[in-house]
Every structure is written in structure tokens, then in C-alpha cells.
Length: 244
Image (cartoon, rainbow, N blue to C red; front, side):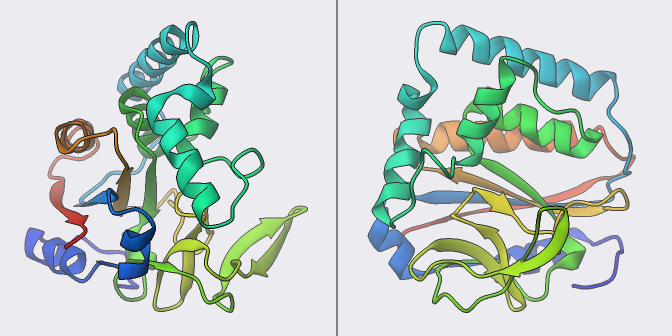
């Protein structure tokens, strides 16, 4: 999918049906599940009253949690820190996206645009790492693998566009053209990042124990409900991928 267009439910379902998680990832964490949600018919726009209310609620809920519990001891944050260590990453330097957002919530979550603000708020509220990408920028289906080390990752460093490569064995999301997100859910690439013109998006909701299927589904439901407010006829498809 390379052209910006509106996709039918059947097209979204076909895209998600092609998504894969390598056996090596499940060997690392047999409890891993991912909810993939694709949406089309999105009307791009700046943050609004609805997205702002979601962010404020997320900030308030995080403040209550962190008043009694250090962020590193929040159940799902701790699980992801353990997962990072299992493939050689250092979670104190490369924080999973959930931990990074929860740490920012005390001083205020970022305000970027309506779509990004919505999914960041849901990530923090439901305490699930959640990424959003431009579906039309994908070349082939999304796949979660352990990197060989030669894959291309389009990012920025020092204000300049650069191409990096993941470490061998690193868990990465990608497509046929290269890596779309490094370290499972640490940093998304530029090529498939959400744009001001994004009308079709892929959302990736990552779960490890102790998050159960009910909590993962609830986060997906909240995201689908919120997305219904960002277009007159938003079409949504979803799929959960788990160990066989």
C-alpha cells in the first residue's frame, strides 16, 4: 500500500491478515500478544476538545498511580523492562513507549495532533504500549522479527536524516522495505510515521502478562470508539496475533 486512499473493511482485513510475528519472538516471550487495529476514513486535524479531555484524564490517572508506585514497578512497565533485557537492550537507556509516556505525564503529555494525542492518551490510560503509523506508507504487511542487523531504519540524529541499523537479535517491527519500529516499541521510524495528511492508520497494541486478553481488548475498544470521532465514516478492522 503506497498511495493515500480510503480502504474498505475487506482491504483492511486483508492487510492485517498478512501480519506476522516470528516464532523467535514468541520463544523470547510466549505470553506476548499484539492487537493490530487498522482504520481508514480518518480526517486529519489538530487536537480538539475531545482529544484534550482524553489527555487530561490520562495525566490524572497516571498521577494517582505514580503517587504510590515508582514507574519502574508499574506491572506492565516492569514486564516490558524485563522483555527488553531478554534480548540485550538496556531499559534504563531505551525505555519502552509506555514507560516514556508515563514519565512525561507528570509534567504533561505532548500535544501533537488529534490522532496522535488520542492514541497516546489510550496508551497511558490502559497502560499498554501503543504505536500509530501511516498505513499507506507500508510496503507489504507488518511483521515482528528478531533483526539480522542489516535492516534499514529511517530516523533522525542531530537534526539530520539518517539510516540506522538494529542490533542483531533486536526485536523490531518492519515491512518489506525495512524496520518501522526499533526495540519492539521504543522508537518509530520516519517512513511510516503518522503525517498531517494521514487518512488510514495502523495501530499496534502490545501486551505481556500481567495484561490479560480482556484488558487488551478493552484498550482496542477504547481506541476504536475514539477513532469513530475523527471522521464521518471511519472504517475499522482488528486482529489479535498470539503464540500458536
